[in-house]
Length: 500
Ligand code: NAD
Image 1 (cartoon, rainbow, N blue to C red):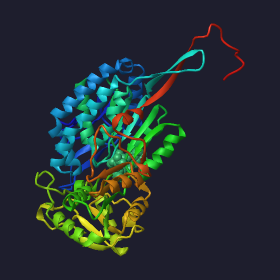
Image 2 (image 1 turned 135 degrees about the vertical axis):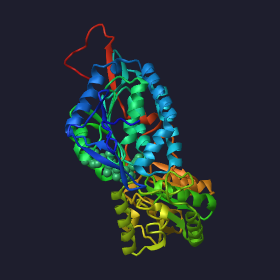
Image 3 (image 1 turned 45 degrees about the horizontal axis):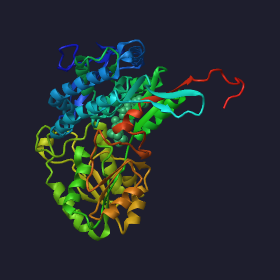
Image 4 (image 1 turned 120 degrees about the vertical axis):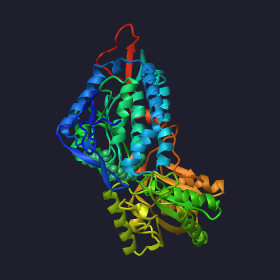
């Protein structure tokens, strides 16, 4: 059961601060809407600066004076392992909530949430293996370094994969010994709150993990600017990320930013075309195109353009669109009404720019789609890379197809973007694949696959797609700082007026 405070028509959720379930200081709530029915199903607390302050102070107290700060990393790891087990046991319930909030396919969310415990286990395993270094110091001294946690970390996440994206931050931050305040997206706060029930059961001391909910400027920004916050881990749009980066810079806070993308999926003439079609479709129509890594630009070799587009369109037409809870559905609704309007707006822009609509572009007619925020999978051909539809992130099921004549041109088009999150390459020539992987400006390059991520493998963006890396050993370094300790071995302090 989600935490509620009354038995009215809609459940009213509460925030989790300092180990307690609390109501918002404002005394007001926001509706959270099921995008399949377009109807609200719960109310989430509308947090403000007072709630943010309470949460950051609770996290700071837990770090400074609570048992967490003194706890041996092996013991912290045991709590993280317990949390992983609890998420596994509750994965299907968490998936149901996530689907209700953001309309992602139940089949996909079950799979995704069953995969989430891997992050907690991976970083729990690392917690007691974070070692310092003894330096070969050239002075009469023993010098060594200690990796230490930063203190209060703030995690601000979007609505497209709420639990997964907060896990990418929470697991390394906690394993490293920090404390945490999470601010989920206003459209999808329910799973983060449900997770706090499991955090409580796992045995985290009060204040180590906190969740405040509400609107970004009202409750998110005060978390970032709070004087006791030491780190911001943000996933969301490049626009908001850049704004928060500037705010964090004022107080010299550390940041990691996972931002937008306009990723190219590049198909060479010698590719296994069946696999390439599946990869291109999964890359742009999986999650209804609402992923940062969406392969939203198809770069296809001119020689196979028409034949490939025919196959792509035929395969896309087989995808069932409708109720995300039906396990046969392949394409669900857009997650919220604002995003729905934005995607339709980009379809108009593409038409005005002279791109040719080869598929979709409208609301589907199936009765099942009802009032939900549905848009047909949409493909534009004849796109030039300078068009807005090829440069701006749509974050929806809209693919722009472009052509190239050779490897150099493919690289030039792919890299002609302010983003650099990911890229896909489809070819059976491994020399081409390796050359492309070197030349593409992207944090992830997939060869003959697309949209793969793992807790073991660093993920992050080049250019305006972000700063820092999540996952793998690199992921925990974001949440540590190095302290150098010097112990003199000199019998007598040398000349105190000369340093060096
Ligand atoms: P968004 O930037 O509007 O919001 C993200 C989060 O920031 C939300 O929790 C929101 O409430 C909060 N926020 C908004 N304004 C804020 C402010 N002034 N102060 C503090 N917090 C604020 O993004 P969105 O529309 O929710 O998410 C979609 C974006 O996320 C896309 O651009 C997508 O590419 C990106 N994304 C990136 C990754 C990645 O790993 N690179 C993953 C998923 C999504």
